[in-house]
Length: 80
Image (cartoon, rainbow, N blue to C red):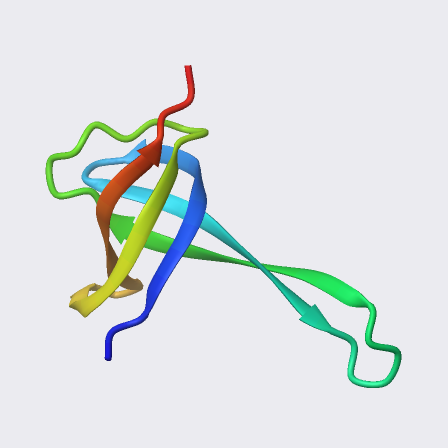
């Protein structure tokens, strides 16, 4: 089963690549307070017009480059 994430585009300065910030909320092991954790992934755009601020859905694929393992599947919400 391939991993699928939803995140926000934070950089689009590379050719055919965007950097997406994926935020998750996990409870603290002892105190059970929800903590925000974020991770950045590089994703292939595959010809889609993606801009900074857009919310996108990522899917895990084969290795595309040294640190690019994800592909933008769809643009959920475009920023104006």
